[in-house]
Amino acid sequence: MNDSEDWKDWGSATLGVRAAELRGAEREHSPAIHLTSSFIFENAAQAAAVFAGTEAGNVYSRFTNPTVRAFEQRLAAMEGGDSCVGTASGMSAILATFMTLLRAGDHIVASQTLFGTTINLCNNIFARFGVETTFVAPEDVQAWRNAVRPNTKLFFVETPNNPLTDIADIRALAEVAHAANALLIVDNCFLTPVLQQPLKLGADLVIHSATKYLDGQGRCMGGAVVGDSTRVGKDVFGFMRTAGPSMSPFNAWVFLKGLETLSLRMRAHCEAAHKLALWLREQPAIEHVYYPGLPDHPQHALAQAQHLRLGDGPDAPTAYGGIVSFEVKGGREAAWRVIDATRMLSITANLGDTRTTITHPATTTHGRVPAEARARAGIKESLIRVSVGLENIEDICADLVRGMRA
Image 1: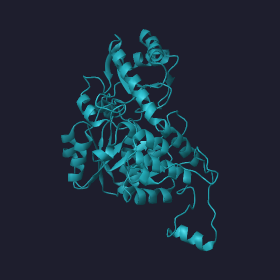
Image 2 (image 1 turned 180 degrees about the horizontal axis):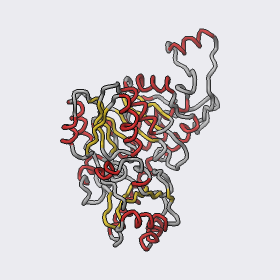
Image 3 (image 1 turned 90 degrees about the vertical axis):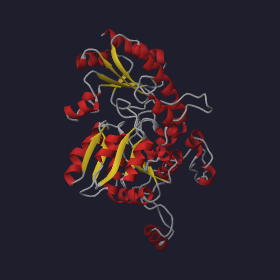
């Protein structure tokens, strides 16, 4: 691998292509896939030293694999973190983080608009082991402050959130969390390190579902935790080594290749999503559009200050992400009609794909969240979420027109 000292001054696009380049004895230009469960040693003494950790080396692909390590080092470099641990999925990244940092009797403050499965992880799994969670509005800093208890250990937030694209003030939440001796964990799935770098804004750890934009083509499952060398490099790694929610070497190779084009893809997603949001506002069947790039979005100014720009120079536009959500007139029945009438868009809950996807959050991603919690989060039956892909924007709009007419 190239020396990490080389990475310090590289831009995000360069890091995505060149950081942690992995080359073997054959000097291959594209990184090799190390599809092996174990590794051999020169002798018994070397095996004992590597197992004991007194000598560097690969032991077993559950926790040491060159391809996975290359992905981890590249993503850590892009996020500005010291360490990264790759996991089997985004949810296993959250699980590994919580299991590492929490004990029975601890308390979490979390956004009430988290991904539905994350809410269920808190309410249905960790609650059984004595870990309580208080859910608050992501944009209401005072609500986070009011929710703090003496046993609060973690703040957890997605920003922008899923599916309403609310923006949380990372700097402000970091100040509140640290004043309470708690850690701030940010799910950066929607923007990726190309468009937002939470660690530089005061967050302690960053979570990724690599399944989404990091892959970019909807091929593989994976997750990642990025942070410092102790909490992540030692503690989260230790949990992953013991419990085994490991990333597949093949998937890590796919994600490595995905990172090479991430900067270009995120720019294209953002540009198309902004155009779609502006177009949707003009459609008579639409009641409301949720997109941080719109001036009437409640956190539009915060997004401009917190998100990175799509290119160099002061005139480069701000990045607002590739997710657009909107409400149609007529409730669930009308929303389902719009979805069912499309012919090109993919009806699936996945996001971050080259293909535009469309889903009904109230009955898919948040379908297992209690109706009262969905109502508090503002997820209505009339809401539709679109993850804008890389097709021609005119074709995306034309396909949605079919739904509007329905």
